[in-house]
Amino acid sequence: MALILDALVGILNEPTIGGMVAELAVLAALLWVAVLVGMFVGWVWRPRWAVDLAGGMGTPVLSNSDSLNDSAADESCESCEKEEKSETLAVTIEDLDHLCKLVEVRDGGPEWRQMMDKSLPNMSYQACRRDAESGPPQYRSRTVLEDATPEMVRDFFWDDEWRMKSKWDDMLLYHTTLEECPTTGTMVVHWIRKFPFFCSDREYIIGRRIWESGRTYYCVTKGVPYTSLPKQDKPRRVDLYYSSWCIRAVESKRGDGQLTACEVLLFHHEDMGIPWEIAKLGVKQGMWGMVKKIEPGFRAYQIARRSGDHISRCAFMAQINTKINPDYLRSLEDNSTSSEIVEPEKVKHWGNNVPRFLIIGGAVALACTLDRGLLTKTIIFGAARRFGMLGRRL
Ligand SMILES: *[C@@H]1O[C@H](CO)[C@@H](O)[C@H](O)[C@H]1NC(C)=O
Ligand SMILES: *[C@@H]1O[C@H](CO)[C@@H](O)[C@H](O)[C@H]1NC(C)=O
Ligand SMILES: *[C@@H]1O[C@H](CO)[C@@H](O)[C@H](O)[C@H]1NC(C)=O
Image 1 (cartoon, rainbow, N blue to C red):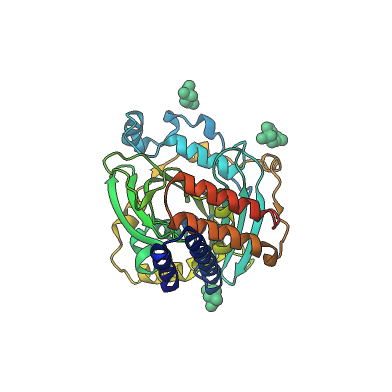
Image 2 (cartoon, rainbow, N blue to C red):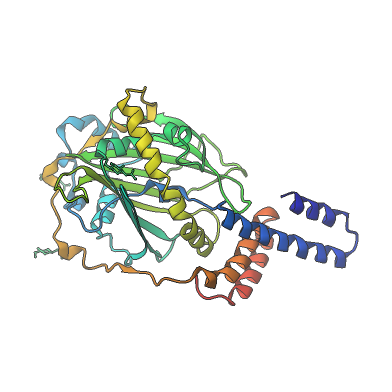
């Protein structure tokens, strides 16, 4: 960074246009190098949602969710239903319906393509991506943790304090709860997350809520409008944010037929305010680095909870769930999942992406650093795109 600062100071002291152009070129080159070094040293962008991982392709799921109607909801939750009708809650039954459709792979979107399949001794992880017709790329991942109960996993992903304390999610810089509904467990939280590429940090206002059916948990989190906390230049607000997961017990891969493992099926997309192609590349490079940290974070959480440590407010809230009547949940026939083929993405050698990544990464770094408004960004990205043609498709 010192080198880059020196270069900037050099530019400011340079009286001639020609000299300035030369200096800018040096600066750009330095930024590109910085980006590359950052990648190799592991200063890699680890997106939050890669962390939140979740669940199972074509598994038994909620059916009939279209017609989940109010009388369908569990009697014990009359007060929640009333609140829903008055639309005071940040997350409503429509959000549950949507998540159920995603879980069932019948939301009508494009097909998912597998991009990653990794295993650790006590954890496995698969991720797919698809490009929506409009909007940012969407991700779906399935994580299976051995020796884990759905309840513990539910609390773990909800526990913002633990995210920061145990550093398993080291991109989270700040969190606070803005609202809480004591009957439904619905929360509105404010997060600030670290962001790579010399860009400013990002802030999120997230509404979240958990539904429960038997021991299956549907956890919805999404960006919500919140006027009492005005937007600022920095950190930049991410409005379009969706991250939801379904948690349930599954058979252990040890083959003993015991439901001692826990599956998390996660759906995530967000508009981070950088070009989607670049976001995809960053995600691809950073995903596993982030996901790997879940297991140690989770095992430490299990130990802390078993030892009877004080549970955080967030974990307490995670235990307030809205019940859905299991009568409305029905396993879907496999035929409904076959409509969307999940095929592995072609494995590309990372070397092929280097020149293109260098150019685009440099452009992002420049655009974020010299944040002089849309024009600058348009020019820089335009140039980068042209040069980027050297490489193949991302
Ligand atoms: C809700 O379900 C009940 C009983 O199954 C049915 O009589 C009613 O018409 C349904 N309402 C809606 C809006 O679908
Ligand atoms: C995986 O779990 C088994 C059973 O709990 C344990 O014995 C083993 O040490 C774990 N492996 C790792 C790498 O944590
Ligand atoms: C799946 O098959 C069952 C019976 O074979 C049928 O009733 C159902 O409509 C099918 N579901 C879809 C989504 O095609």
